[in-house]
Amino acid sequence: MMGDDTMSVISETPSVFTGKVTHAERNLTRMDGNRAKELETLKTKLMEVHEELAQTKSKLSAISARKETIEKELSTVKSTFTSKMQILI
Image 1: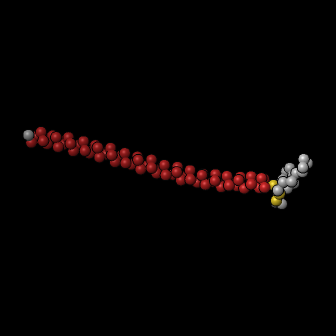
Image 2: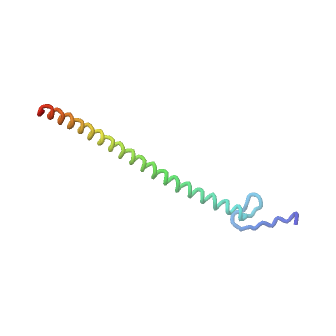
Image 3: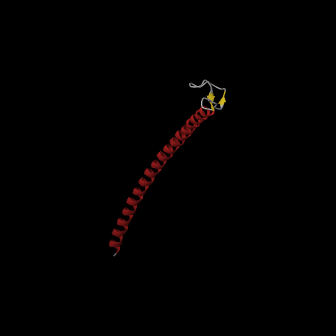
């Protein structure tokens, strides 16, 4: 069976090499299609994660600003309280 080229073939688009499409070529084509779909899915997920990150950064910035405001207010209240206690004593 040295010269026997019996490969399983499917008659779709012809192959460059044999004129027929082999199962391996069909599998490669299907895998390429699957990779393209996966790539699009990953790109979509990446965009969603980037948007979520931007929202989280925005929330962090707002929280930090509120924290600083409250700390300043607390410092003012403490100093006012301390000075009033000094006067009272």
